[in-house]
Length: 492
Ligand code: NAD
Figure 1 (spheres, rainbow, N blue to C red):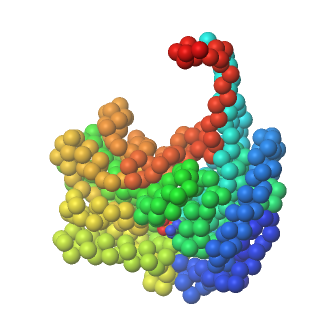
Figure 2 (cartoon, rainbow, N blue to C red; figure 1 turned 90 degrees about the vertical axis):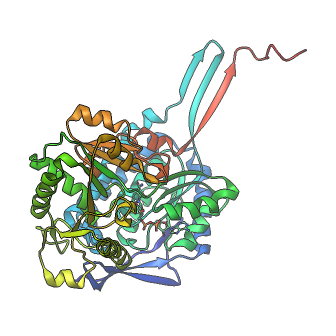
Figure 3 (tube, rainbow, N blue to C red; figure 1 turned 30 degrees about the vertical axis):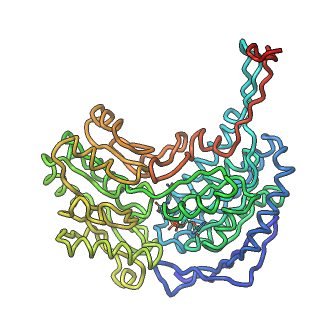
């Protein structure tokens, strides 16, 4: 379906700003269709946005929490009204199926509403009267926050930052990814319109603008979601001015299937398939490698293929029968294909999964045949690297110790999952090195915005979602009025 390309602008101090350069965003399902144009902001634009946010902070930090919540709730209402149209735009620029784009909006609203409903409780001053006097612990805003987001879940990963950031009294400059810049700009525009100029700004571009946002002395916090390699550059760029940071990074999440997992549980098997292939595998917390106890390995693979062939239907995001859309960009498609080709050349067996609904669309777009990988070695790149695409290796293990050590043998530790009898699985879960371990489910199916989310090891620093996801946008300020004003050990 061809529609007129849209044009989005940077938003600086409440105004839409034209830039000298723009770039086009194509539809990954039909790459010869331009979905829209986004500005290519310069470093100077970024500086102007940071200055606007810095000026706005001086007033906004004193605004009442009631006012912030009221404005955010109005923004949520307006976003909800715009969602059907925005979700269509997201599906067109991203490549994900329409139901999946709607789902991304639904998760965003769950979080934004949670943040509004709990902000008063979470951000309240804690007043402690104790033996030593009176202590008040307050949660002050930090300052100007640079929010930098990736392409895979552009709406939820922007609102996950904007809602708590602004509710806590900060001002923000957000930079979306050039691979999905259009819908998120519309979303931020709707939110920004409900707040005073300068509270929420958007600039576009890539590393150049990113470097300004992460090194400028007026930025006090960086909230980044993206790749681990990019995060390493960000840490270096921020070093001179020591900034607060939340880093939500890459993962190579494992699913560990215990010997007591019921391979005949069709619902569980379907959840496993979805946890490997939703959004064509382009989710940080997708289960990207599956280890199955050898005693049930052959039956597991057989039932897995059956379930996958039932659920996976690849095609145009607007076809209501489609469960998996396109890969977001050509570079990503080539990367995932190279991992599959590499593993094959080293002796792994490839099994195509699911149905391609429209060969013509499939051949023209950035689609990949979902692929199960068997007989790969434990250290093959398709097992060790974050594939971020529609492929998954399933590997056998012999005993639980080995299974746990295979899961933990990774530089990453974002989420993970254990599948089997619930109490047994929970016991094993305690031994997994990850920010989240889900039992008998995985990926977004097991996500609950009320609880903290984030990674250990090179998967990140800090947490989003839950109370921590709000407190992460505050500085703890202790106001201490001790009873005994002088210390006994200090001589007269
Ligand atoms: P990316 O790191 O390439 O880009 C992320 C953002 O950083 C983009 O906006 C990009 O323009 C910007 N950027 C690039 N270079 C920069 C620099 N030098 N300084 C500042 N900003 C810079 O990631 P991507 O390819 O867009 O997204 C995929 C990655 O994101 C995967 O690794 C995935 O696991 C990760 N991710 C993590 C989570 C999580 O919650 N942990 C969620 C989603 C995605």
